[in-house]
Length: 249
Image (cartoon, rainbow, N blue to C red; front, side, top):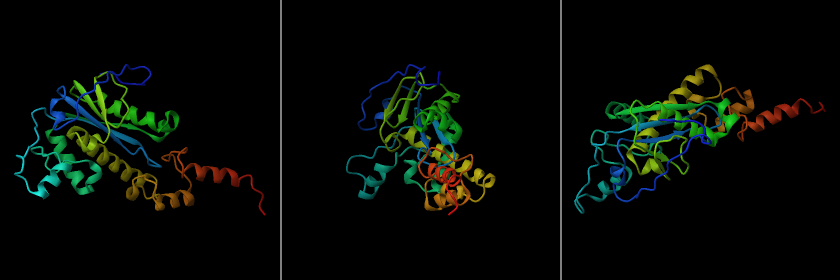
């Protein structure tokens, strides 16, 4: 599967219906792909791609047979055998994500992670970096998908037929699975980076723009894992540069 710069890859876009259990009608096998870390001040943007078994069908309760609580849960979970609790990673706590990540890796046909680090993010911009990370994840899959379901609105620079879905991680099981693997992988990276760059609290906030993180940048300055052009980091660099020129009065 070809992947690379979006200017060099001809994306093949599809326009499939999005009603009911529409993902079961995708060309098979299909991959879901999602990224995390786009809005962080530090650390990489990480993407994951997942191919779930085509025979893994959602449990569909008979009309009127489910309780109100069950219907509410069904709206946020996909009801896949062996992956009960699978939902958008943003709706899950760390413990549930970790448990699901193990089960996803165990039952899927293939999964892979792609990474784009801060230096590259600064060179190509965060939007392109997100697409590159997703393309890298897709390119590392052991099984070649016939179709790619992308979370978001922009196509990924791969030649495989694809379609982007707004809020795809809440609509399509394979994208939800990818969001969980991307999130758990990135969290592990940020915990490891916390040991290499102590004092910033990477293990706590995972690079997001919390008050704790901003205060650490003001106190320590930015490190090589920070995205220098991002608001909150660029302020620290600008203040440091300006202080070299201000008279001591």
